[in-house]
Amino acid sequence: MLTVFNIQRFCLHDGLGVRTNIFFKGCPLRCLWCNNPESIDPFPSIMFDSRLCHKFGDCIKNSGGSIRPEGDGLVIDRENITCFDALRDICPSRALTITGENMSINSIMSEIEKDIPFYEMSGGGVTLSGGEPFAQDGELIELLAELKKKDIHISAETSLHVPWENIEKCLGLVDVFLADLKHTDPEKFSFFTGGNAGLVMENFRKLDASGAQFVIRVPVVPDFNFSEPEIRSIIDFASDLNNSSEIHFIPFHSLAKEKYLFLGKDYVFGNARNVEKSEIAPCVEYAEHKGLTAKIMN
Image 1 (cartoon, rainbow, N blue to C red):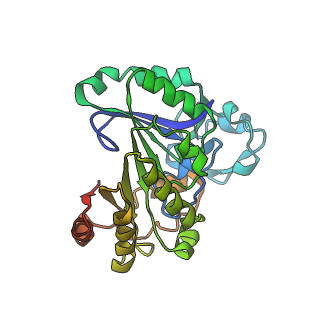
Image 2 (image 1 turned 60 degrees about the horizontal axis):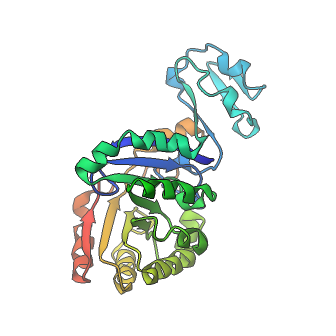
């Protein structure tokens, strides 16, 4: 079984043509600005929008004491909830929802197959996203193999913050790796993501040496990497790779603020300013000067 929190059809980004994006749950990083905070934990997450709550009480009855009324609202002891299926689809007003479920290869493929005519018409395919697709168990290989049997183009968004073996076994199955290069400074990377920049950069070198096709993606985040020296260091690393040709800059926005509220999580970047596309023009200019094709993504 693979842990999925969303299957989004008719996507026009994250690869060529019309695409179906499979969002996997679970990520080894804890990026403080993450736009998909519901994807971080590998197990189901409870999202609660108090504005939609009509106090029907179904969630309280089925929570085993982990949800209780307090004042005009609810207290949700998320850490004590283990039986998520008892709460899935229990709320008539959809104020409380469970994000994430285990899905079989057949179930995922049945959703993907609905869109095959659109792939054929547009040159599209499937994009694996998350979370971190390559943090899933061995069944990911089975899904990739099934997609290849049907000649479906596969793109994979990845932080590359996984053991190289997880990537290596997917070489030849994934058509394009959309790989994040967030920072080159180990201390800053660790502080803002909880991860190891050295692992990511080493995996980039190995991916480069493998001959696989990849696109480097840079989330441009204020107070993290949005300064001329930091962005130039990222671009310099990218341009030094033998097979690197394309780099995408992704401007930070704080549209995920509500998701953190619904998850009961603090959002450190909740008050950070958005990065405008016009501000990234010098990044594009420098990347092109270094021989890369550069784009600013939505």
